[in-house]
View 1 (tube, rainbow, N blue to C red):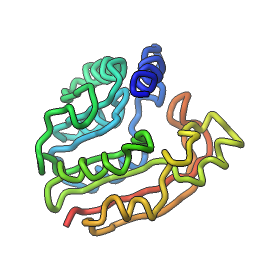
View 2: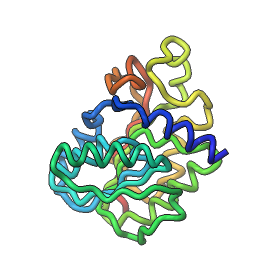
View 3: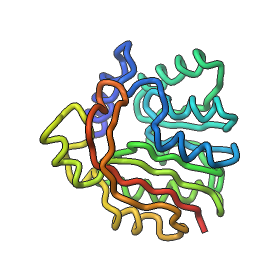
View 4: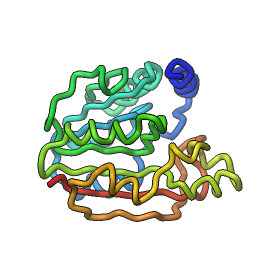
Length: 207
C-alpha cells in the first residue's frame, strides 16, 4: 500500500506547476501571524508552500513527506524565496525528531492513511513541547458531499481518512482548545483544492 501511496504523490508533485499553489494556506497564515517565531514542524508538507512561508517569517522550519518529488519542489520554492527549510523524506517513525523538539506543529491537509492517522497524531504530540501550539486544518467527514458536487475541491474519498471534531478531541486530549470547529470554506489553492469544502479547524495549546 505504501508504495502505491508514495507513487501517487510523486506523480502529482513531479509536474512543473505546484499542485496546491505557492501561497500558504489562509488559516495557517492567520494563526502563525499570532505567534512568536520559534521551531515548527510541517508533517505531510508536500511542495513546501506552508513551510516556506513560515521560514520567510522567521521560523526555524522542519518538514517531512513520503514524496521525494515534493521535497524537490519545496527546495525550489525555498531557494526562490531566499530561505532554508530542513526537509526529510520518509515515514514519521523512520525520521530523526526528538521529544519536545518543536514550539509548534502545523497539520495542514495532512490526511494520513486511516490505519495510521490517530497513531501519527499521538506520535506528533510527543514532539511538541509543553505550551506548544498545534495548528490543524483538514477536510471533515461531511466533505464527501462536497466532492460529489465538485471533484476539483479535492480531498480523500475514503471517509475514514476524513476528520470529525470528536476524533480531534480524542487524538489530542492534553490540549487547551483555543478553536475547534467544523466550517464550510472556499478553497483556491492550485489545481487540486478549488471550490467549496467542509473542514475541521483546530488550534490547541499543549498542557
